[in-house]
Length: 421
Image (cartoon, rainbow, N blue to C red; front, side, top):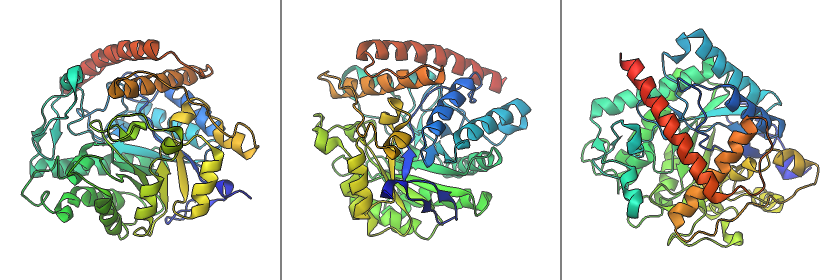
């Protein structure tokens, strides 16, 4: 049997039926009220039918005023009090689990990475701002530093969301500590300038993550999965690097974490979009499995299974990575937006490489945004019961995404007003 299709037993005893994970993507497809609806459920049914052993949701927000996008899903301590809300979350988890996959809800707080158009106050470890070039600089406002009491409150929010996910039928949660979101902002010395118990040394900077993991674990059953998505590096001079990542993993070894996903980059760094550190597009060879080398370094420090995500398009590369023993699972994200049936296809020996469209725009930021918009267009199509496009038009995808974001922003602001009234 291929290593890809061998089951994996996680530390909590859950058995994942194969080594392929539908990795998290930000779908931005919530219904009115920031809850899952039929379109999102249909999309996850497609991925369930595709045969992945593990399905990670797009990031679900732990705070109603801190969203990565206006169409994000929010799950809080009171969300499930309404019968309709609870049924919607249960329907979502049931669809994702319907073909035998384990489904983990990714839970997140964006910190300072909140779009200014959403009208809510960005917060972070310290008073900093996302640094972008050109017109993109106005996308984010300056963040306010959190107080210690507020930090404790957000830790509780993570635990509340995890507990609600368990009640809703999810098999576990993945705590998002990568991609420049709030936990990553605490981990990085470039964004954490604090001189109290939450900043300074790496031991202090990782305290927020450890407290989140501990509080989440204390609120759920032992068999419920708790995973962490961690940056291998943030790819910025003087920032969080692979040496820091190894030390964080060593600390997580003692915290009953069921697996760690290795990723990298942030909104200020193009690494998470498959770009070189200087903004140039990477070669196809370099882009394939582009965080695997970091996973090799981190593996020596890890007692829990590791998963690597980023640029996966070929079965042969997955076979090689699993054979090396450096990782136990492989996450596939963008390619699953073009072919949701990758696991089944590979098991049957067909479509062994997924051809992803190239965007030939010069500006690396706009190129990355176009790639994400094209993928989101396909996610919307699948949610509506249509087939994904092989080559969505970049400009049309970006325009469609901007229009959708504008409409969702108005709806989100109305929802916030109703909550406060």
